[in-house]
Image 1 (cartoon, rainbow, N blue to C red):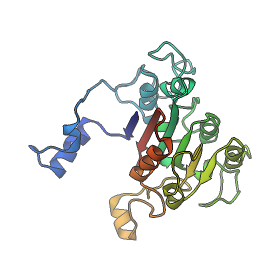
Image 2 (image 1 turned 90 degrees about the vertical axis):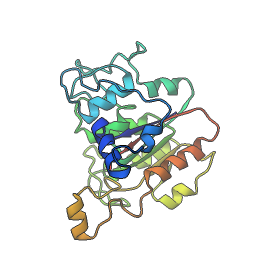
Image 3 (image 1 turned 45 degrees about the vertical axis):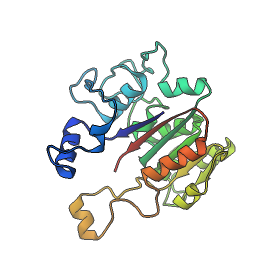
Image 4 (image 1 turned 60 degrees about the horizontal axis):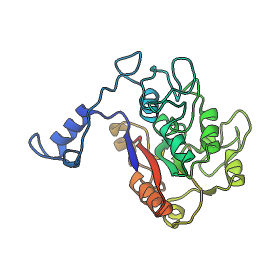
Length: 253
């Protein structure tokens, strides 16, 4: 199973995409899906959810407060729709199903991390990324190298910013992960690659600026050296091979 999180997108955005790409009477790929379900996406305490609350609700199948990040109103892991304080991805891991997360943003982005982590504060990037590595997920493809390295330590894309001095890249290697940094290294992986941690940017794999600023500075939307979400997903399918798997992918850009 592949679950795509398209960050911040709802029915209004799909409608605008239809107008732009196919016209009001046309059809885009979303219209051609064999099954579509519309659900009420409000949080437990607000009409408009946050990214972290939305991701937590998808991961556990129950409503949580706006501030929830893998947590309920009491700061605990939510009691899921299955009656357990585990996310659907954690349940899959227990059953021997391979799991993975892909994000074009940093590793602490909630759209993927909420399926494997639980923290009191969305801004706790150090703790989120530590829990992500400690989760033992089979595949982690993300940006955000800055949260993997100690403050001041130089990495492939810049300096680390962890205040606890932990080097999560070295910890990941010790835990059996193959660590890669480029889309060429990713493309070379095949079934049997083992556990993979791909880190493709210091923060996001895209240039997080307005269209006007990108145009004025001659910058592309995405960094050319980083793999696209399509390339990361294709690599995941190769790596998982014929195993049962559950993959959550979020497009942040």
